[in-house]
Length: 364
Ligand SMILES: *Cc1c(COP(=O)(O)O)cnc(C)c1O
Ligand SMILES: [Zn+2]
Image 1 (spheres, rainbow, N blue to C red):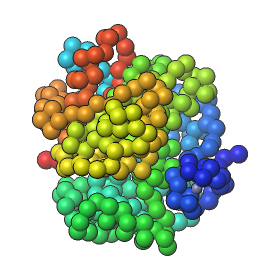
Image 2: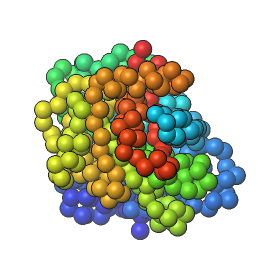
Image 3: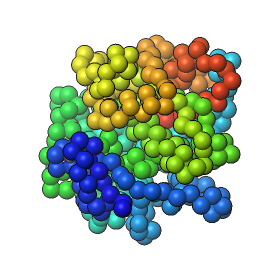
Image 4: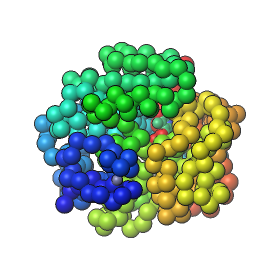
């Protein structure tokens, strides 16, 4: 049966229960069996809703969509090796977060909720604000006062009520959680429906490779919504018998905020929480990723690794990609910076997929 399952206490709830977390505080996952009618999919519009039977939204009328997705996957030769880059910055709000937002807001509409709360000053906030505007839903956002200008301007432009709070990022999360007690916590980091959108990244990659899986996928990771989405998506295709093996999932973090990198190389099961600094890759500066254990498990289970890159390496990778014609924000350059290190020990005969996750116009 379609359901929500708590990753801590294992309690099971019907899928239509309007909760983001388990009452015990645990993270919820979705149990749902997708199907892939390949010839029907091939005839549909090139967007992520072409995988309609794989997305657990029952009511077609609830779907909130701008026709997003099916972003181009193009090969680029980087340091002598071919890498397929998925152009995730070409989404309506300028980042892959639209994958999660289209499914999460569809869920919100299906539940008949007219106000949501989220803590993000970045691309998740932009995406939820835009899809809320389209859905006619009020999207109340909480962000640290230190958040950067362009993304706040974009959030405000969509008309989302925004509250700026002094102090660390956690203050915004606490405020959002409190405010959500009377509404719905549409956290991109915790709400499992967000991952039901980001998983379409994997479906698109495989379809664009002729329904084949790549060998390795290299992605930036903070909260891991793209990486965990990719994990779920590839796992769905393995279960359905469409691809044979999981790609190795490799995460790249900024060395100045690398709780997953530290845990991975220490052999720890949970992210290393303390001692992190600011980085130009603000979109992945997440000291305590809520799904950190799941991220580490996905990387280890698929035989991937975690790479950390310095500030200068990130800036250099941004320049390198721009000189190839790809205008991306610093957070998105983290993947390209990590690839430089990955390629040094790649055997060279593998199919590598990566992503350009956010638009450069967000960080001019
Ligand atoms: C959100 C974001 C990421 C990282 O996504 P996580 O879900 O935090 O791992 C990477 N790049 C950009 C541009 C983003 O906005
Ligand atoms: Zn629980």
